[in-house]
Length: 120
Image 1 (cartoon, rainbow, N blue to C red):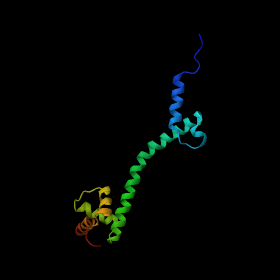
Image 2 (image 1 turned 90 degrees about the horizontal axis):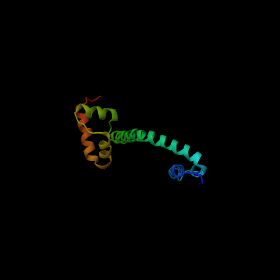
Image 3 (image 1 turned 30 degrees about the vertical axis):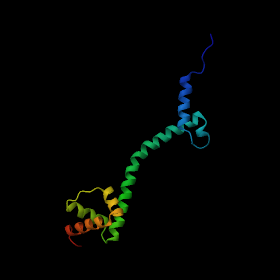
Image 4 (image 1 turned 30 degrees about the horizontal axis):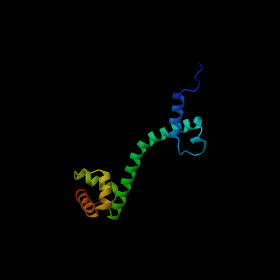
């Protein structure tokens, strides 16, 4: 009886790795050994960057809010402090959206923040 040398488990595992490496540049997409390393590394990057994406969006929202505040003659920190003192709880994503889409509502929030904080 002939001996089975190359089982389907091994082939399936290699096919799975090469399928994940599809689209990679050069040998990383065709050779198993290099594809295995590339896929492992890409998994590490993906895991890390799912966390980083949250930081990046928060930075973007703060930049947008700050730009809208500067246009109204108030700094971001004074605006946020004013909102906190006025007990207005609204997150940065919503504030950023408001600054872009509903400028009038954003201006009213700026006025409320100004009323609460003493002029300096």
